[in-house]
Image (cartoon, rainbow, N blue to C red; front, top):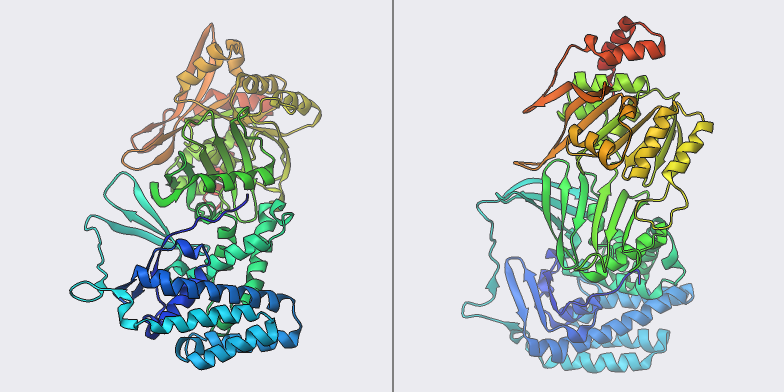
Amino acid sequence: QRGRDNSRKVISGKVDTDYIEKTENPYFISYILSLLNSRLSETYRLSLLDKDTVLKVRNDILNKYLIPLSASILKLRNVVTEALLHTSSQTRDNITYYYTELFNLKDGYFFNNVNKSLNFIKKICNKYLRKKYIYNNLKKKYIKLKEVSWKSMFELNSSGPIKLKRNDSAQSSYLSSYKVGPYIVEVIDIAEPENIYFVRIPEYESIIRRGIINDLSIIIRKLAPPKVLSMSFENLVKYLKLLSERLYRCRFPELVKFNISISHEIVCFRSIRMLKFMPFLLDNLIDEFYIDSPETHIYLDHSKYGRCLSNIIVHKYDIDAFIVHLRIDTGIKLDNDSPSAKTDFLTSLFRVRVSIDGPPLAIKGPSIDVRKFRKQFYTLYDLVAMKTLSLDAAAFILLLSFFRRNIIIAGPPGSGKTTLLNAIDYSLPKYYRRIYIEDVQESLDLLPYGYHQVKLKVDPFEVKVKTRRKSIEVIKLLHRKPDYVILGELQTREHVIAAFHSMISGIRCIQTIHADNIENLVYRLTCLYKIPTELINCIDLIVLMKRTLYPKERRFVDRISTIKYISGNIIIMDIFRRNLNTLFAVDNIERLEILNKICEDEKICKEDILKLYNTLKENILKIK
């Protein structure tokens, strides 16, 4: 199922300050309970926060009087909703009038006038709805509640109602608070390696609004036809949001008149069991987030505050719902025979790459890694400002990219390889005919900016039977006349061979690969992948990225080197190298052999190349 309900047996919440005078009114409490609409018979505890006082309803009163009446109110609301959705306009107007007067939160008859209240209920049920049994049932429970002494409803200690105490840790401090869609995010420093990423829903702090959201999400789940649940995620959200808005007007006319607004996005997300995932998918400051297994906290990599632990715990049914949405949108296969999957999940709300490992491979249940594709991508200017690399180094990499040299960006997972590749891609001339061959779409969509792009998607490594292979598409490139090829990530020996096949065929390309250092990369290429050492000369430049976690997470360029095979030896020559926090030039750029190679290949003098290098430095500062 795309969504399922998880009943909560303990109910607590804040009563909106406008309605404080009704907090101790048993009819008002029954009305509040009817909003919650989730297995009322299983509720065994109810607490209401009135300013700084917690009012705990006695369990015997709750079960004997309040819950039965709230169940009858819920039945009345259900038939009223049905009538308002399907009856004539005149009948709708009459029902709306009486129902609104009955449950008006300021001075509705239901809360303070028994006789008039029963008269209104009778008119609604008998005259307009023709549901006399609902009136009889509600009347019986409504009158029975009169037996209860209002003051005896609440549990008291020796000093009266329990006072709410605020508990702020002296060692914690707020780093940031910002809005993410309908959520509020607070990042808190608790003097630990991981900061706290605290997600809250403002409307959940009001028991009335939370009740409305809970009620609507359950009704939507019942009313939505099966074919709707097979929609793409983007269309599903749009449809359910509109359905929520319509249902709210029909189901709660008394609250609409009272101008109580709710987030229909929250209703939608809750109804399809995506409420816990959406803040992480919507937050543009999150680079990546992780779920190790069911019943664990979501944790994440924040672009400003590094590794953070969230307050959100996901259960098995949350993960299952997320996977169902993913299957419908992307068609991924995930079962016992193929327990791993990697795919793009692209909508107008978010753009992510999802990697999943499920049972029997994942012992404790599905684990998920979601990498975000930033809507506002990093430019070379941004990376220089963030001290990922120096201005001189950025201009040098861009210079070689401008002349379409063969470049490998290496580094460990999460070190920023693709981020740098995309920044380079964006900085290159628009008139270059770029062809991309990727298993997941991590490159930028530059067509709206006037760039020439052809994007080809091959089967990811996790797919057992591959029909679209990177090696085959590289061979086809010979007849597609690319100016520059972006091969994406080289994951296997087949990918590496495809890259070298491209380079020795005269096709210029840039790609990423995993490696801890350049020496190990060379060993991997020549020994593990059996690439002939003579072909190493095809590589014009290697950029090594690094990622550190102590004391805070950092990503940066560590080395920029050329590589050459001479007389049986592979020689690595550093052009830039990092010393603590500084990326410095090892040698004067004018003396680099790679510039002589560019002069020979492009038939251009070195002075023009150096002039272009200085121009590129100036241009980088303009690309914001």
